[in-house]
Length: 361
Image (cartoon, rainbow, N blue to C red; front, side, top):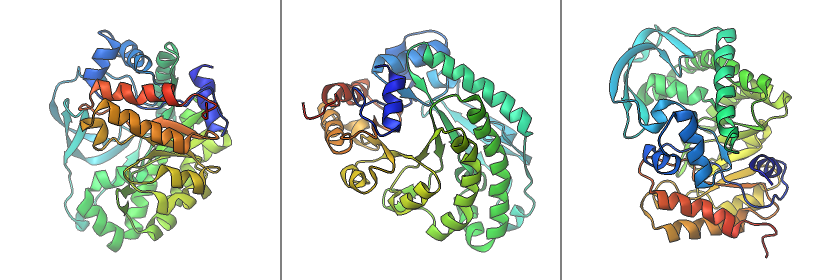
């Protein structure tokens, strides 16, 4: 059974030959160790294959292999160029963390919020550019037998990154209508982004990401999420539902208080299920026939600082709790720059050692 069939069986709540693995490598060191030296479109998918990954969601840009040096720049564009603002932001690329930080915003208070003009690029331009990028990524991963799926959306996350947490929190309570209009503007671009993936039928699943939680619960009032955010998300993901592409929801932290709402909105997968935050066995009992569970290995501490045997043990426990009947994919969330290669290998080897069906054998 190849990775594609293995993953599709999980998406359909069927048992494959073994538990599949899903992650993205954000560590240039691991990419070099496992993928060697060469063009990004070769070494990144090669590294995924060498580690034992079945499914990837990461792109194949030069930054992913550590070739882009540290730099600071100003730009009117935000969120991969899909959003255009009148006044520029200041960004800093951190090659160690493999992250772009937004270090200065052109507005500081609610009065400034009234002056914000956020205009998405044209739908046709977004679809043209993103379809080309999606096809390129799929082709590079397919060469190595790895399934590529899309990741995006993030209207809420984009909003609070544009505004910054203090101003976003003030707007959420004092300028809700204005904040909703901002989110709706951002959603125009998100809709085009998702539509490009759906119309080209890039992969069997798509990850919609918006961080709404932390380890102890939700970051936002549930009423705000249900009344102001989820209706917009429903519109964004509608092209995926029409194309019968499985919807996976991504947020760090404890999202259980919103799980029923997410399921009602059409989401069929949850990622990551963090073992230090949610009991994957209990989540399986409550929602195992309604939502695919992806996760099982702690990315916050264990993967970075634990021993390979400890990582293997946790992966084994998660497989035992969540894999019966399928609907489970083992994941760490992503391999950060500080992740030891041996720990990553321990997690994925566990899928081959303990995740072979029938599991009772």
